[in-house]
Amino acid sequence: MKSFRIFFIYLIVYSLTLRGQTYSIIKEYSSEQGLYHVLINRDSTNLIPHCFIYSDHLSLFESPTAPVKFSPQQPQFISKYQYFFGLLNLGQLPANPTEPQSATLTIYSSTLKSPAIINDQFINTGKIPSFVFSDGKQAVIRISPNGNQLTFYDHHGRLLREKKFFRSIPHNYEPATGIFSQSGERFIFYTRKIDEEENQTTPLLYLLSTIGEEFWKYELILRQVGALAISNSGRHTAVAGKIQEPIGNQPDYRIIVFDSLGNIQSTLPFRAVRLDFNPAENHLLIADEQSFRVIDLTTEGVIVIERPATGKQEISDIGFLNDSTFAIATGEIKHLMGQKIFDNPTIHFYQTNGLQLTTIPVTQNYSFFGKLLFSQAGNQVGFTLQDHFLVIQPKTTK
Image (cartoon, rainbow, N blue to C red):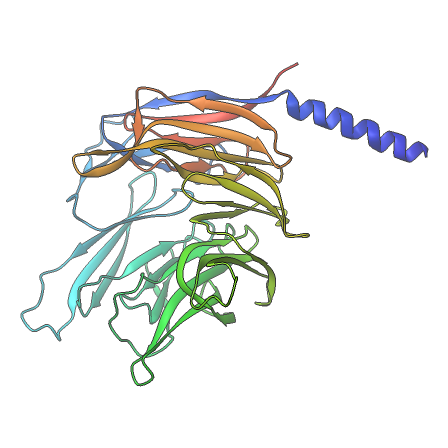
């Protein structure tokens, strides 16, 4: 009985501590107009931007160093924690369509010094290769235009391995995609296998190592995939999409959660365009365009459901800071020079018990992507506006 009373008192104190916790903007880094992204110093535990990324150039923060210029039409790639940024320079299209087209990927870190170079070539059938960076391992994976092959490189751009999955057949389905775990030890890869003879398309999900070792693969029953997520440790994976052929009253959409062996841990009857695991991997945050849910993966029950966006507003990004706290970014959808923007964005902070901690509105401004950036320690959140970068941190009040 005594231990129970102590535990009960601890819960009360802990609850009051959470209620006293708020989030506020602790730093604002000004930039030129038209800021798209920032690159963070990977050696710092705080969100300190060293490089600013615009539509046509990169520049160091408060540095006289000449900017790196590029074409706005040049394909661009950025890592999850924004340590690395890649620019793909396409060579001239060959006269013979069966001949490969050359391409060069230049990979920058936040200092813009000594960029890595990957020389590439591919048969251009209307699609180009894509590249995924690992912040943890500083590795690079190239996804072939048709999603049938992965090429693995180290952080210097040196070739490590090529892995083919099936014969390459051009198709118009959603592109193959992949995500690294926080450590960089695991890579979840989604692609489609096309069988011309059987006239069948098979969606496939793979869990791989940084150098292409296959841990498991799974043939999905989804016709379309709307979101993909991998936990920080790489032990759990989630995929959301539309079911190929619903039976009876079966819901049209499904979220499937896999364990480290590729076994299905949970199936959830919801539509989602964004997914995120908490670090303990016992909660899954899911969101569509205007609402979100927190799922208890032990019971598969919904423990929080909220609708922070209404009217022309949409959720632009979501993510956990730690096991019990997460952030949601929203903004009003508008278009500027033909480009979608998130106007008057708001950043909402919640607890997994449903308590809303803080709401930070950013009026009279907009964000191109509305992306939340989380420090790896989980104590800071970054947000890029079109003319400066915000850093938000918790503050405990008495």
